[in-house]
Each structure stands twice: as structure tokens, then as C-alpha cells.
Length: 174
Image (cartoon, rainbow, N blue to C red; front, side):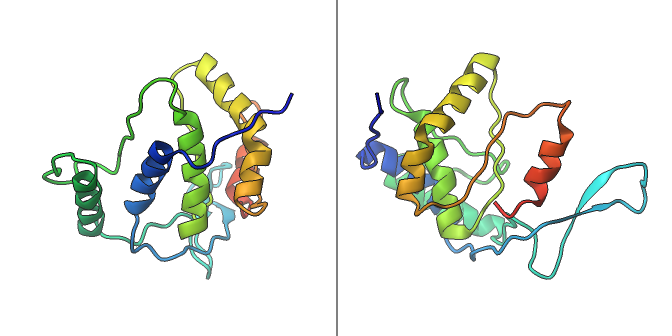
């Protein structure tokens, strides 16, 4: 049995658009990574180093730009505009059963397509949700590859006994 995913549900597309619109005006990032030993802490500490192509997911927008985008999104969705940015944390609230996992996974692909962002970490509150997200990644992999022209991507469940995976994640171009 093969699952079919709807890629054009309006409410999901609106949620994806809202998140992506927060970064309107962001230049497309070229991301290549290097990892070096920290000269001040040579006892195996890793630090990200910038090379001539920049740092991945480098946000070049000012808080005022993000706040203006946020106001536009809030007004478009009938929400009162925020007075300011308390943090860089934003939420998308959706009813149970509406495809939140699909929406945030697809949002990752859209952020990559529009702005070149490549590094994403998904944090969940329970083992059950972690397993559900991992299963969703597995069953939607072909769907997303079809929607996003075989954009290369990898995913894994963090395991503190396999720190090599984290290093590979940090240094891979996707």
C-alpha cells in the first residue's frame, strides 16, 4: 500500500507561506561548512568556522525587517500585530489532525528552496512524537523528493553515543 499526500491544501499552504514570509528579503544563503578544533579549548571541542562562502542559515535580516514581515503575516491572518519581538521564536498553531508534521517538514523544504537554509533540528517533547516524526520522514521522503526536484536531504535521530552523526550533519552541504 502506498500513501498519497495532498500537496495543495489551502490551510497547509497558508501556514507554510506564513513561516516563509517571516524571512522575506533574506538573501539566498550559499552554505558550505567547516568544522575546526577550537584553539582555546583543544581538548576536542568543536567550533563552527566561517569560510569564504559564509555560514549556513545565516540570517541577514534585522529585527525590524522580521517584525514588519510578522505584522504583515498577522494582519493577513486576522491577528493583532505584536508590539515587538520578544525572541526569535515563532509558533504556527493548527488543530489536531490537520497535518502539523507535514506542514513543518514541508516548510523546511520551502525555506531551503527560497533562502538556501540547509540545517534544521526538530525538537519534540516525547519519545512517541519523536518516533512519529521519524516515521513521517520515512513515508514522505519520496513525496518531498517529487515536490522539490530531488533536493538532497538526510535525517537521523540524535543519539549521544553516535556523535559522528552530528559531525556529519554539521559538515555536510545538506
